Image (cartoon, rainbow, N blue to C red; front, side, top):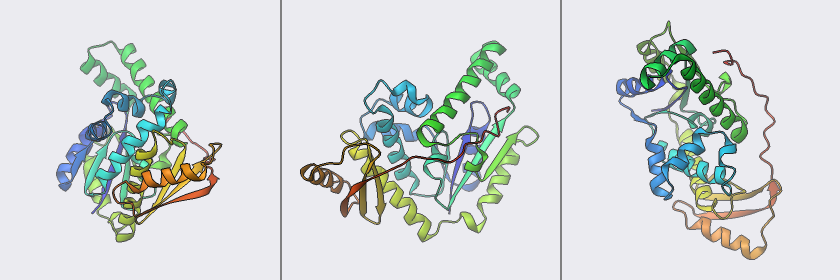
Length: 280
């Protein structure tokens, strides 16, 4: 079938769309569940995972490789969960982790700021100026997080297959549009796209297993084989250390062989970033 990710701002009705969509399609609907799974699996307080996903990276810089650790934990739990297919995910990070998976329909839900302010005022019992300040700060933190960690702007429409504005369109309209779109052949799971997702999930699982001791490695996978690459200026390991890393990786379930790449790789992202939703 397919996977649907819904990116949304606070009080944009994205949660309502996701829940009604999952009900209409008979899919599983997940969001905060991923944080709970990661928290339990890696014995990490949930609040740290929430801050790693929500706050701009500077918040975690006082932790030793805090960003790399917490993001890798959440990414691993996220991808292990989504291997099951037939899922609607709403929340942060889904569109970053699944950019190249063919059977993922990526949706952005937006709403007018005035409508969002009114909803924030009602739910939090605060005045309009405070509600506006909170929403703008929240939007900016999410943008900074994406740009600094992944070189992607949450408001860049190129990240999504569909951008829907909830105003003239209702939640029910959005659900119908997404339901119709996800039925198209291009979003059907194929053996090739499923393998791609499973390779991505395995590489994330190994990354999470190594990140505490080796935060500056990049893992890729092909079938059960994983390839461990050194990124940027990090020191290449000596032979004994390389064997230790190889053994650690091969203890991870699903890994048949770990291969150490003897050269360094770069993850620098030079893509331009656009901000088409800046005034929304």
